[in-house]
Length: 267
Image (cartoon, rainbow, N blue to C red; front, side, top):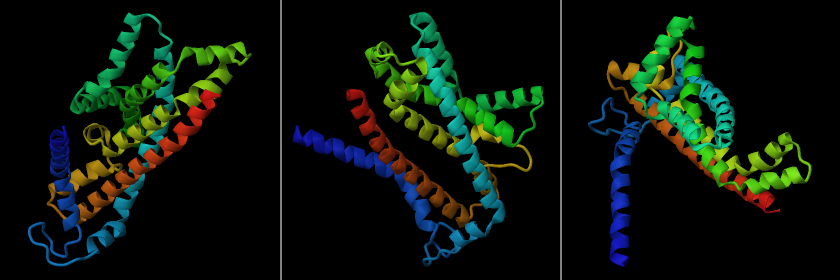
């Protein structure tokens, strides 16, 4: 038993090394004073200085963060409403149909989704740029939020809401004082997942981005086509560290939210 546990741990370590080795390799050479990723000459922060001195790149970073925050917030609101609606469908067949429709954007290839949005925005006359990117990010983030919130709703006992109604609570008070506090961990999980998907998305964004507006994923792709610069290593390192901070932040927020919610429900 002990031997199998050690073997399993070694396997996990090996898997993580394989997954993270390219990232650490990229991060290592972001501090290289040379211009290539073949030989490390000496330690330098010049590539990071170049990133922060690039005004256009900083504007693109701001665009990306604004898109991610807006799409994350809006898709979280819509996703919670959608999860509540799915939960209140009692018949199995319509409920399964709604869940299947919800999962279409999750399982569909990004290229097909991006091309579909491009055709749609062109037909209805929406100019490609900030609005088109925001709408497309909201569209593929809402199903993710529904998937994250719905299990918490299914986990909650209906007797909690029934007890609140028996005590004279209105529908709004049941929602705001009982349901939402209970599913807060799922809501935060959905928001951070939507935020991460928006920050990372390339394929869909590539189709719906117009002239004069870009996001980091599209910009990195465009620059990489003209040759690998170590400033891309520095930028990618900063993005990786930002993502790690988001995950750590979600972990601590989820812990702080789960404890009061559990205590409130137990009362």
